[in-house]
Image (cartoon, rainbow, N blue to C red; front, top):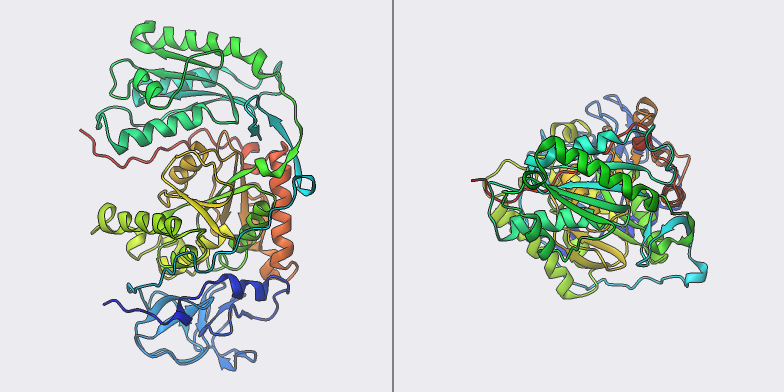
Length: 531
């Protein structure tokens, strides 16, 4: 069954968020919008507890981050959070009842996209007033946040070789080159046994090329086997890459096999090191930051703390003429109308819907994946009933500004402000596409405690709640749980996140960098068949 909800149930969440961003949260529950028939438990609430602010008494024990009904909700009626429908009552639900997937139905419903109807341009600050960071200026005008040498494989058959080359360059061997962050291998499982033309090969090639020419990569080696379908010559031609002082290529069959290729590649990197080390950081505008926005292991607090705080930081970044890339297409499904309404044009809004329809009508038909309703067990344990509720929080990472462009996976991102890239929700695959598109920084929110890092773009981890932040303090960079604790407003938290972006872009090591994460997180999206 599909139904069209009234406009009051399709309203953008950006206006209700403004009601919260300047005040500190207190009390046992959090009301997110005056029109909601739900509130969120700020802490564990036992059965039989009176909630004076809502005039209800709990009928169940409510886990922290979970919803409870504030009035009677009849079967089939929308369940509303942030004035957005996140499901439908599967039965008659009395006030004070715990709301979760046991009594919440996932049901498709039509949404009014109203393309560009709420578009408001960003007031970009003059360059002289923009925030600054200490970046690495490249000859082509781009600015890096890190300085790596990259070793890319064209095919899985050369994966061992590229890893052996990178492993040779230990911190001890790089000690004489203090301005180089490392030599990193980008290997994958594709490149052969696949279509020789078409979107799967195009996607693989633009991902590899995106890393090869990435601003955080000072120089690159591309290594292939020699007989694979993803031939180096085809890759170079399709992606307009040329061999030169900063780009060398090898094929194992032509070079003489595994050992000789490793030796030749190590020698090539040694020749690149002195020039790659000739960089220094200088004061540059925050307009050079391109931040990929990620979330993983979401919980009931994601849409209250870390995600809107990151969104507030993205709004600040956009005002400084920087770029934020929202992705994870399955994780905006159900609230995509809140983005199309803010699109800068009808054409941009329609590009987003075209990607949504591809996912729903072609890519995931009949599959047990989250865009078709069910979120992961961890998300459910964290208080999220279905994909609509998860998407509500996920979309908040993009802030409240206009949607300026929509990109396919790994396409170069050239538009300033808030943009969208079509990717899966699986974090390594999604972040790989964003980095290939040019992201020189990743900001990753988590409620359950995702352990993630990336290279060559550093990854900031934002915790949604204080308990998890304290428990996993070696992995988390900032505690957005302060919002629900009542010690910071969302506006203050957004400013703190933006400041951390500047510090990280200036060279401050993230927790994931200190732990050495990022060597296994280059994962290319495989949308094709294997043969």
